[in-house]
Image (cartoon, rainbow, N blue to C red; front, side, top):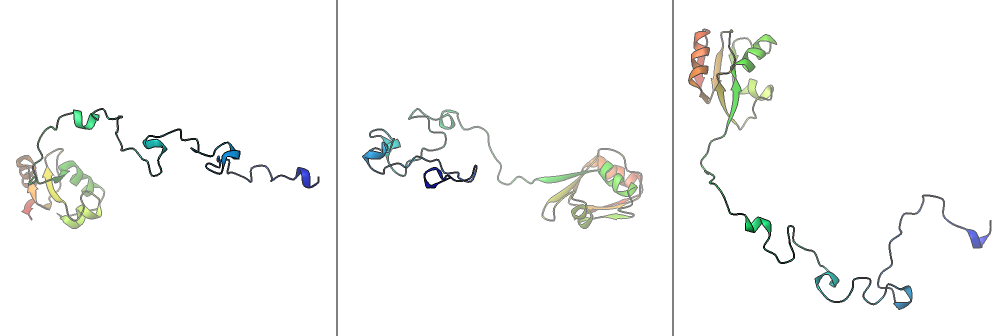
Length: 150
């Protein structure tokens, strides 16, 4: 080994970039491999997402569709079989309210909860929620429970 054949250890160097715009002698001077003229040759060039070379972009060719009601209320649905599961697992005994929904990740504290009628409820529960379907309300009261609207 001598000074003429020193080289870095295998895998220790990473940069293999072309050094652009560093004089004509480098072979990458002048236009710095960007070609002549046009937007792509300029500094700061970036094309818009979805740009199709001046053709009308797909996002503008396809018509707007539908309607979004700004006053719509989104309910988080909780079914009767889910409540029965909470009873079976010993999580609730006599009442179900927002703290139970939040603790068991059935809803977040800011969501509006609606009790839905899927499954059957055997336990006698006091169920608190913002809304109830008719079948859910009937099933809770048939099991001897109570419905509390928040």
